[in-house]
Image (tube, rainbow, N blue to C red; front, top):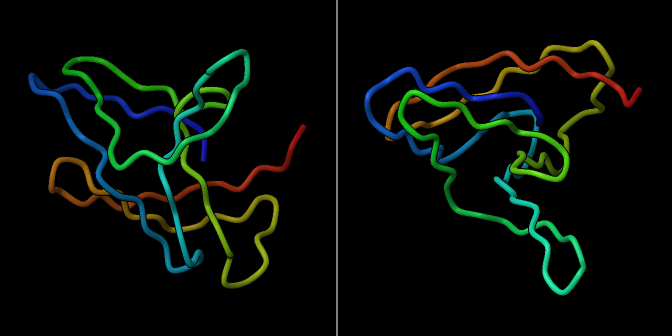
Length: 99
């Protein structure tokens, strides 16, 4: 999943988890470069600084969706629940194909 998480509060927020009934497993990943090689690493949490935003994008932090419980279609909206610093938020995520 790509997009941005905006934090308009005075305190840092921590993205703790992402869940959806449509996927068996969802992980937060960070792309790193080591010895001239880029690789994705699973991370437990992602901090969004106070009064700031974190962009989820290729080559940066992003959310990986694994093992869809049924085929995912371009244009479909999938319900997702994220947990930020202990508070859950329901989102609707639009599926877009590669350009």
